[in-house]
Amino acid sequence: MGNRSEIGARGFTLIELIVTLLVVAVAIGLVAPAIGRSTEGVRARAEVAGFSATLRHAREQAITTRQQHTVVVNLIDRHLTVVTGEDEVRWTRAFPARLTIQAATPSALTIRFHPQGTSSGSDLRLTSGAVTYHLTVDAVTGRVRNQRE
Image 1: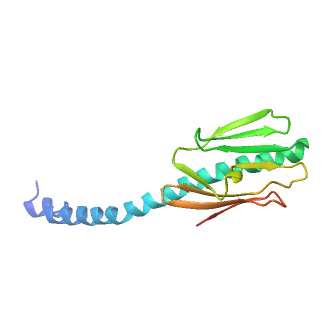
Image 2: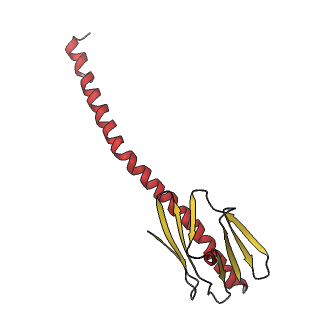
Image 3: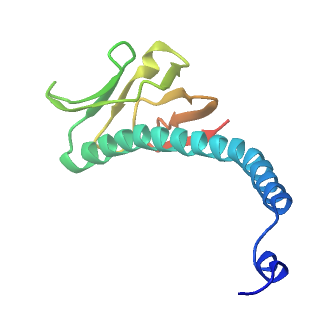
């Protein structure tokens, strides 16, 4: 069996362990808020992307089927309803409770996509947490765009 100095040379002292844990705790304390902010941004982007995808799909369906498709944003029930020109409900999609929608005008909550690719146009602000996007539907092209504010 060796002497005490050989055994102590293979391990860490209590001070070294405490300093190492302190450095790790400080690093976690600095990184955690940044991770929280980035996940909020990713969540908001995904919610806005889903909303935009519904509008784009309605436009594609209007062109493909040669029938007007109307997207109605229901703020009270928190869902989007897509209706054909014959008043047939094609599909309904709920939007997350975190997502708030503000329309520039009340008519902006009803977006019509015509078979030629044009639309009635729309101007909306979508907010999720602290992140806000400006969503527009161009009346001439029917193109759906969103931009972070």
